[in-house]
Amino acid sequence: MAAEIKRRDFMRMGMVAGAGLTMGAVGSKVQGHAVLETKLETVRVGFVGVGMQGSSHVRNLLRVPGVELKAICDIREDRAMRVVKMIEEEGQPKPTLYTRGDNDFRRMCDEEDLDLVYTATPWRWHAPVLLAAMKAGKNAATEVPIGATIEECWELVETAEKTGLHCVMMENCCYDRVELMALNMVRKGLLGDLLHAKCGYLHDLRALKLNPKGYQGMWRIKHSIERDGDLYPTHGIGPVAQCMNINRGNQFDHLVSMSTNTGGIKTYAHEHYGADNKYAQVDYALGDVVTTMVRTKAGQTIVITHDTNTPRAYSRDFLIQGTKGVLRKYPEPKIFVEGKAQGRGHRWEDLSAYEEEYEHPLWKSMQEKSKGAGHGGMDYIEDYRLIECLRTGQPTDADVYDGAAWSAITGLSEQSIAGGSKPIDCPDFTRGQWKARLPLGIIEG
Image (cartoon, rainbow, N blue to C red; front, side):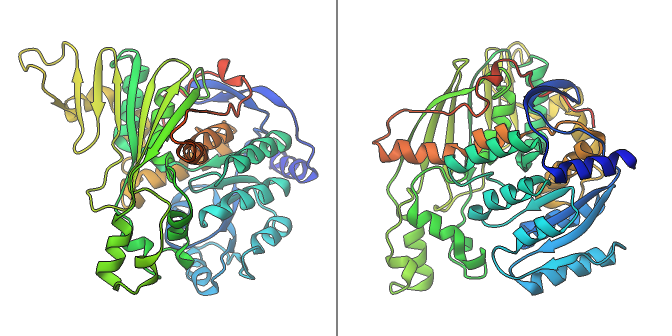
């Protein structure tokens, strides 16, 4: 406990600085900005934004050992009070409420003695909350994306480096079953040397975007009106980036993006709300389908698709291809490995045939504990891992460089499309450290 108090006092003094320390990780070591790694017996959390996804994270955190929810911040007091009731029903003391408007998270960061500030607000508030937390001496975590612009991504990286604090983007899809299994297969060499990947976010969100009770203040439709690019790349690119060792021996080099015409969202608004409806008449910047092609420093290619305005089945279009085989997740998990399906011809095998040998140990250990949690359990696993890293002094599975590199695809794709699909160089948020950083290991759980 003395070490915990010493750490917290040190963080508040704002004296942490430096870069390039080697940090221990489960199954591997990675290099990055200097982060204080003192173990925390209890992680005291302040949560900002407790709507649909935020309240789901709160439920997860209440199930994770060693978490105390000390403060809740939301612009709607009724929503905050629902979460307070949830917390008290689990036997924790009533948290302090911060409900005085959009910027009350700043008061929370300044006044509360916290170890972690976690946010699930609309995108435009992610970076401001993270920056306020770190400048007040708190570790920070956010729902995706980590920042809405490339400039915000750079500011977050620089602030994390200056303060020595964790700044984590919580990409839940890195913890889904097939994605974890794919990473395990890649690490064990089953697919050979990686050549290519496909991924994306293909999810019909028209009803949610146009429903006043969907996204708070209908913030998400505003992005579709104002921006043309891949607005939501991280669910797809996160797991692919981990397989391809992005920021850890490899790096995004450049990308090219293009978008289709817009029709889906406007047609939906016309059919469901009438021709006179505002959203049936407005001009949308976002193309219905945005395609981005990325090349890595290691010579691999990645195709990322964004499609949230057309009628379709859900998919993240996940595919990993190497010199010895290929794995796909949608429409159902399949795999083809050279020499493994003799006599079957060039036909897919069910991925289930490989589960016994290649199931990721983290999924194995967490499968029962995560039952009933959001998105098939992966939300609980990501929250558990964040807290476990803070309590054991490990570096987090993804860090500020990963959050920045994955999120920056949005701004880079906008630049490419605006320039007639011209190639755009990808920024190196590690400033060359990627050449020495070792790949993410296989977490045992």
